[in-house]
Length: 139
Length: 394
Image (cartoon, rainbow over all chains, first blue to last red; front, side):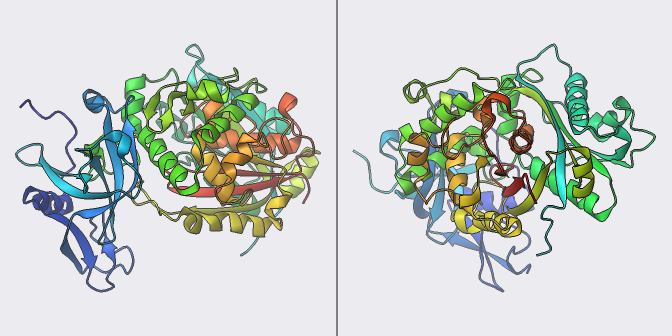
C-alpha cells in the first residue's frame, strides 16, 4: 500500500476526539446537556443556547442519503486518480448530517433517501475516515 | 421594520467585457469600470467620498492593494475621499456593499459611494489553482475536505436533490442554460455569446452527476462598478435613477453540510422582507436578475421569490418564459453561466444588470417597461440569500 497522499482532516482539540472515535470504529456526535440540541460538526459552544455543557454521544452509524453526486472530472487534484467517486450528505438517524463518500455501491443505483451505514476506512495509522455504503447489498 | 424604500438609488454603472483578457491589467479594468460608472452618473468625483472595493480572489496582492486605497490614488480622490474599505462576502458582496452604501448615504456619513469589483479569474490564475481554491473555500477542513468535495460537487448535490424533490427533468435544467445563452448572445460584455440548444447542452459529458460540462460556469476576467447616492441628489443627477425599493437577507450557514435542508423556510423570508419593504407582490416584477453560479440555483431562487410555484420553475423556463421575448425575463446578462464567473463579481454583474434594465440602458436586450426589477445574490457554498428590488419610480 502506497503512501496516502490526499488531504487529511485538520486535527484540532475537538476534531481529535471525533477521529479518535473513528479509530475505534465509533461515530461520535455531540448533544447539549442543557437544551438537548444535537450538534455536528463538533463545537465548543452550543449554537442554540450558547451553553458549554456538551456531551459526546455514539451514533449507530445508520442514516439516509440526503443528496449525492458522482464526480467524474474537475475533482480536486489529489482526488483525480480516484474518479469516479461518490460524495454525499448523509442524514444520520440521530438527527445530524455529515458529508462523506458512498462506497461499495453501484453508482447508477444511488438515490436520495437510500438507507446507508457507516464503514470505517483506516487511511493512515493515525486517521480513520468514516465512509458509508448502502444497507441493502446491490445486485 | 424601518424602511429604506426609495430613499437611495444607483445613479451610475460601469462594466468592462467579461472573458479572457491576458493583456488587460487588473488596474486597467478596475479604473475603466469606475470611470464608466462615474461618467454614467454625471457625478463630480469630489462627491464620491467612500470607495468600496469588493474582495479580489485571484490575486492576494491585488486584493491587499485595493484594500489600501489603490482606487483613491488612481482616480485622484485623495483630496475629498473619507473612506476606502473592502466588503467581501463572496457572491453576495453585491448585496452587502449596496446595503452598506445605502446606510452611509442615508445617515449622511457619505454623499456618494463607489462600489468596484475587479478580478482576473480567467487569466490571473491557472485552472488547477482555481479548482484547488474552490475545493477549500467555504468547506470544513476537519469534516469535508478529506472526501474530495469541491464547489462543482456542490452543483451536483443541489441539482440531484432538486430533481428528486420536484420531478424537474434534465432537459428543464438544460433549458435554463439555453435561456441564459440566448441573453448572453445579446450582451456585448458576455463571454459565451454563442447560443446552445438543450440537446447540445445535454450532449456534453457528466462532470459531477447530474451536472454536465455545459451546465458549468466558466471562470473569467471582469470588472463592474456602481454608484449610490441619496434619492434627492439622484434626481438632480439623472432622469433615470434605479431607486432601491426593498431589500431582504438571510445568512444561515458556513458549510453545505450545515445548510438548512428546508431552504424555503430558511431563505424565503429574505424575499418576504424585500417585497414588504417595496410594497409590491411577485406579480409586479417585470424582470428577475437572478444570481446563478449553476442553473439549478436559478430555479430554486425563482421559487424562493415566489415568481413560480414550487416545482414549476423548470417547466416555466422550458416553455421559454424567461428567454428574450418571454413574459418574465430572467438574468438578462446571461449570468455567470454565460457572461462568466468573475469570483465575487457574479453578484455585482447581476446587480449592475438590474440597474441597467431599470435605467433603460440595456441595449439590444432591454426589456420594455422594466419598471420593477428584482435581483438576488448568494455567497460561499450557499451561505446566504439576498433579495433587492429596484424601480423606476418611488
